[in-house]
Length: 93
Image 1: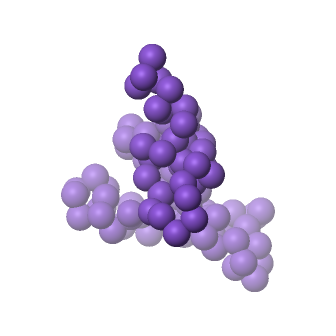
Image 2: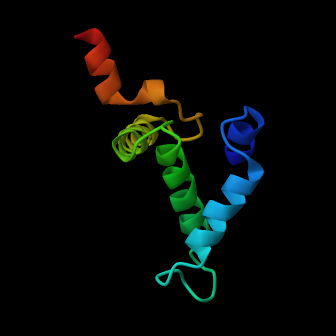
């Protein structure tokens, strides 16, 4: 996702590297790096918010929709946001 957003010109690679480095160096980051992907996600969310591309509420809403869609998707099938039962209810209503 980061590569795709960078390739679309939404931020420079230097900006991404700076945000990721800052997250990895945060005092609450695990010394053994076991939370690297959590730090990576936090860096991306902050960069999206800083750039005005997606705020925290938007990110949280999509994450919740994705979780509902995953729960509603039959095992072995691809997860798509259209499987979110709440989205289907909004579209029908």
